[in-house]
Image 1 (tube, rainbow over the protein chains, first blue to last red):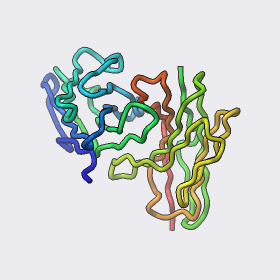
Image 2 (image 1 turned 120 degrees about the vertical axis):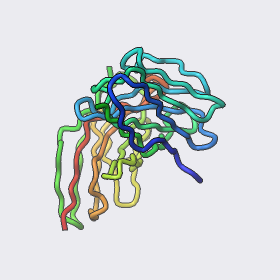
Image 3 (image 1 turned 30 degrees about the vertical axis):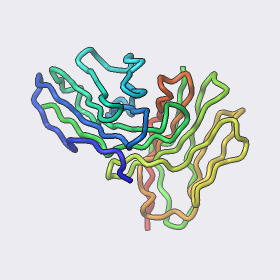
Image 4 (image 1 turned 90 degrees about the vertical axis):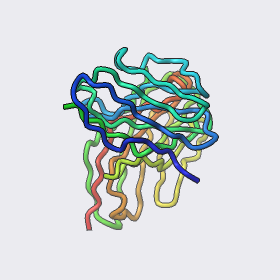
Length: 114
Length: 116
């Protein structure tokens, strides 16, 4: 079956602009995760969804970051007023449920803020 | 707080040889899961192997096996008969109920180069 997909693959934006990153998880997976991968910080957890609900948003780096998930499927991560420090690869993963299950990753979106 | 430490930033091995990547962790949880993920230059994160902490038997997947020492909080990955396609970043990760939604807590990674 289809894996996790993310779009766009690469995004270059000017500082101050808003961006939306999309994640399409594996069908039937109830848990969805967003991570950020940068040279300085390694892999950081941002937020997870159980169904459409995000019980804990404390991993989001600032209030410029928000995320939603609709229909228990597609999720979007929105970054408002982008800053250069937001430049990173944003990875999405889904799993059957929130637990010790394998998380399947998408190919990521490389965001470059100029 | 949970921590995952990979003390080898870079390693190199010749094709067909065996290499071991180190990982240590710290958690106060009794129930947790440990993972090794591989990230080749394509950026796609791929699960290599998974270990449940309550299982004493070390997990194996073909050429990949782990040495899980629960008391020492050590979780090393052994790659046998290394292949050029094994060249990648390898991340050790820990998951438990104390992580939000069982999110992965990753180490900094080890860059493995397999040479001909």
